[in-house]
Amino acid sequence: GLPPLTPPLLKPHLMDMDAVLQPGMVTLTWTSMNIDGYVMSIHAGLFKLNDLVSKIQDLVDNRIDRNVRMIAGLDLVDLRMDESYTLDTFVAMQEKHTKDLTTVIRAKSMEVEAAVADLIALIQAFPREHVQEEVSEEEISKIRAHFASELYLAVLQATSTSLVKIKDRVGSRTSAGFLYLERPFFDVQVELEIPNVVMNPSLVDIQGAINKCSRAILSCSKEIAIWRTEANGGKAMYELISKDRDVIKTVLLLTGSIEGAKRQVYDYLLTFIKYDWLWKGNMQQAYQEFMAKDPSLEDFEMELKRYVDVEGEITKIP
Image (cartoon, rainbow, N blue to C red; front, side, top):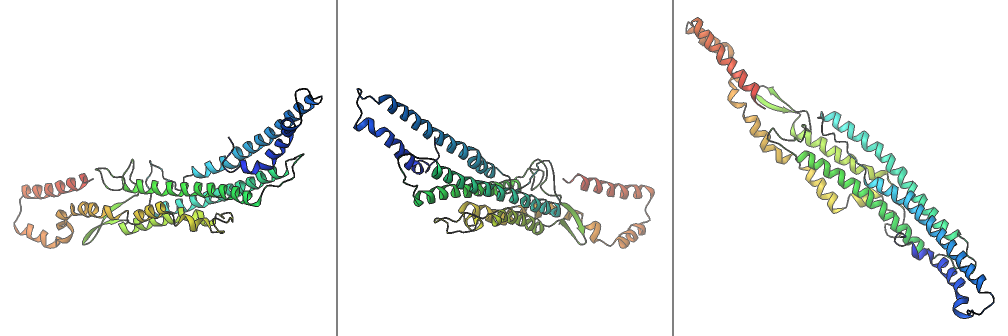
């Protein structure tokens, strides 16, 4: 069937068809001499009307709906489940990805707007024989507003879906550690910064990278010009998307996404405290105290074994 709001645009053409049918309802009878001509005119009118409807359907399907569906299905974030990232690589990759897709969305938006203009022009210019009434400006405004809304919803869907993908990836954990799915989200190392054991990059830096990625996704809509209609007053698409309730909710969740991992990270780092004597103790003093006992060869072997065992325990920590 025809897309919503399109039938009212056909009102002049339907009136033209009614004018063709009118003689049969008013003046002609089955004994009229020109009945054959009347039937032929009906067939010609129906053929012409069907031709218009087919062209409208083809234009909407292939130049409007197809582009709108393509935009709605875009992933504005590049998350590869089999890879881990450094923070700088992650941010740079996402910013480049969103920049490339912004160009795609902008081009498709322009294609859809041009197609809607062609749709209106097709209906207005299609020949009529009996009725000269034009399509009302109100109906033209409605059809533009309808497809502008469809385009906005497509960009909104792409934005929301992409933000949720980041949230789901960040929130995925296994018993092996935080920020895990199939592979760790980020390359994170535990390092010794005497006198403390720290995580590198820090949770603050990880949260900052996630926030930058979220902003990059939202920034796609900053460069997408929304069509000026009575409904939106010519607002930028970013203004509308950034105020969407679901988008705001997801962005807020992402802004605090690492908070839930703090306790887990802290507990993990605590596993190294039992070994802090290795770096906090005075090695020279420990050596002198050991040598003061006049150790035997067996004592040396036992002390060495103690350190080897400690090394093995540390190596086994996930």
